[in-house]
Length: 252
Length: 266
Image (cartoon, rainbow over all chains, first blue to last red; front, side, top):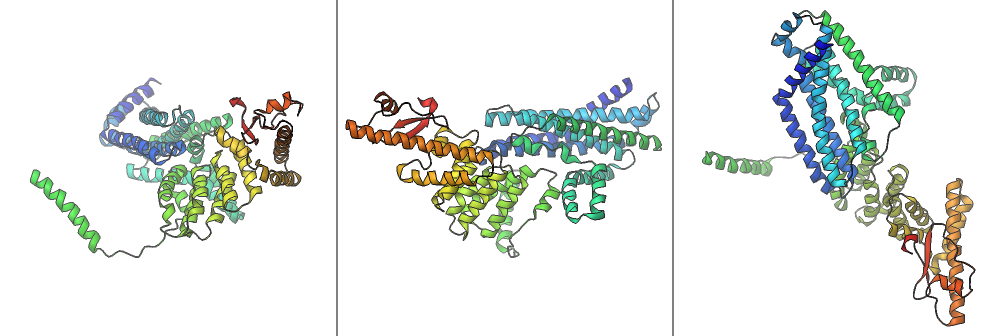
């Protein structure tokens, strides 16, 4: 447990020292501040300001996650620092878990910074504290947690570019499953059964998307919130488990 | 250094301008982006995409630069991307009927408004503007009454608009027709809520009728109009001022007409 904590702390420190992170964060701040300009175009419709802001946090969060997550194991192997860590009494499982928690903490910090600006912009425009918006950002954070686990899983056996491509494909397909299922329902038969199978097996990332509900003041129920949290934790755990297996088998 | 900056400052706009003047452009084709295509690539950010497309469409709407088919398509697309987003519904409902370049403008406005009533987040402007379009352009007082009533029930409606909506058709010349309309709605209603609302409107109109008759009798007997509905009770023309089913107060205009105002305004 102590090893995980130490690795996580170092991964976190390394991540927040990365200049790319500040570049993306700078862009995110600029984007969120343009929401003030967008508010003028929205003719007083706060839902537009919220949609625009929450989308910005999500996109910047995904970009940060990809930049930090895809190369986290690869960099350690390339710079040979991993050999030094492995020579210590540390298991490979602890390395993967430490990397996961460290990266997730760095991404959570980045998203928290963006959330603070977002809440400031919405507070200024709507004179309200956007509690539902904050919940939507929390759900986005769940998705980022899943995405970090996915990137670590692919990074455990593939190069950063390949891991990014695989993860991005799953990210897009994860948001498409409901649409594909709707279309398959119109075809029916074996197609529908196959798609239904894929629907339950593949990660359904639309579960984490409550941005629309938040923008239009619609509260989600407790069972939905809890099921989404359980889904994120279960799927991330599964991916980390496979990441550990792959990383253990990897010859260094 | 300064020379370099000046060269760039001149060279770049000149190059851009020359390029724009001489480049051979492909003929402009109206782009009907399929909804499913957007949904595939927007990573679930439908609401933000709808908001951005709407800002662009809203400014172009009065000009109809790409024809009315494209305009109708874009509105439908935005509604499909974010069905709860109310601004495209109410804005289109009230603006479309005035777009002369659109051959079916009023029908299009009604269609968008009805879609909004069905799908939008609760926003009084959607049914209210639909009611206004039915009244002004279609002269359909039944539909107008129905949508004004819906607007009056929506949370967040300003009190003055609520009073206007509930007072639709209470003027003496239209009161009889309005009562017939609500009686027909009551008779044809399949659900309890509509039936109840119709009964409330009928009762509301009957109270106004009763008060108006009492005012006329007062005028005949005293030669002047009462200054307040309470005078009718004091002078024994009515036993008591009936309670409005909508929680409104009644008052008398200088010419003796019955009006309504919010309960809070006394």
